[in-house]
Length: 343
Ligand SMILES: Nc1ncnc2c1ncn2[C@@H]1O[C@H](COP(=O)(O)OP(=O)(O)OP(=O)(O)O)[C@@H](O)[C@H]1O
Image (cartoon, rainbow, N blue to C red; front, side, top):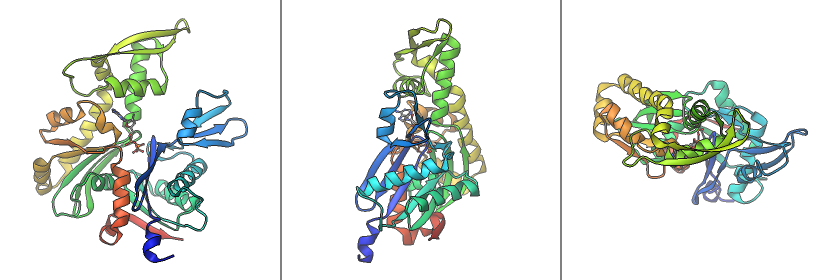
C-alpha cells in the first residue's frame, strides 16, 4: 500500500468521559458513541459497547451493568477502555484492525499525570495502533474550533466536557497557561440530583438529571422561565412520584459548579501575560465541549469577565476535529503534541 493511501487510515480520537468520537482522515467524524460498556456482572463478560451498550441498560435483566471506563477524563478501568477503544477503531474502518496498524492522535485532559497519560497511550497500542501521538484536549479543542493557534497572539479556549473543564491560553502553537478542573457536565447533573433530593425528597436517575439540565438548565436568567415535569421515587414512601421544577430553581442548583468554572477562567486570565491578555480582550473567549451548550453560560462568563464570549460552531465535535486536523498537518503541528511514540 502506498504511503499516501496509508495516511487515510489515520485516526483522531476524542476519548471522552461521556462520548468517544473518532475522526478518520479524509472522511470526517465517523464514530460518535457513548463511552459505555455493558458487562455481565457475574462473569465480567463484555456484552456490548457504545450505543448498543447504552440501549441495553435498564432494558435487560439486573445482572447486566453499565460501565463508564473513564472517569473525570482519565482511564478508571484500563482493560475495558482498551476493548472499547478497539471496538470504536474497528467501527471507524468498518472492519477488523488486523494488519491496518493506524497512526492515532488521542486527546487527554491537560491536567493528567504521567501515569494517566501513559495509560491512554498504552490502551491505544493494545487496541492496535502503530504510532500514538498524545495531545492536550484544550489544544485539540482550539484547533477544532478554528482558532489561529500558531499565530503569535493569545487565544483562550474553555472546553467543558462531562468529566473535566479545561481553560487554556494558547499562543504560537503552545499552551501558555492553563487550568484543568474535574468539574463539568457530570457535576452539573449531580448538583441537580442533589437539589431534587433535598427539596423534594425525590430520587432521580443520572439520565433524568441530564435531561433536566439539557432542557431547562441555565447559567443566566432566561427570557422566559420554563417548567419541566420529572418522575422519580419518593424517598419517604418509596413510591413513584411526579413533580414540576422551574428553570430558576435549576439555575440555583447549578450555581456552585458553574461558578467554579467561571473562577477557573478568571484565575487563568490573572496568570496570562499582559500582551496575550490584550489579544484575548479583543478576540474573546471560545467555549467548546457539550457544557458550552448550557443555556446562558456565554452570557454569564461575559458578565463576569467583561470579555466577548463565543460558542464554537460544533462544540461537541471540536476535540475530535482538532485531533483529526493535527494528523493531517502533522509536519506543521508536530510541536502541539505532548509526545509521540512508536512500536
Ligand atoms: N444542550 C446541552 N446543555 C447542557 N449540557 C449539555 C448539552 N448537550 C450536552 N451536554 C453535556 O455535555 C457533556 C458531554 O460533553 P462532551 O462530549 O464534550 O464531553 P466528553 O468529551 O465526553 O468529556 P471529557 O472531555 O470531560 O472527557 C455531558 O455532560 C452532557 O450532558
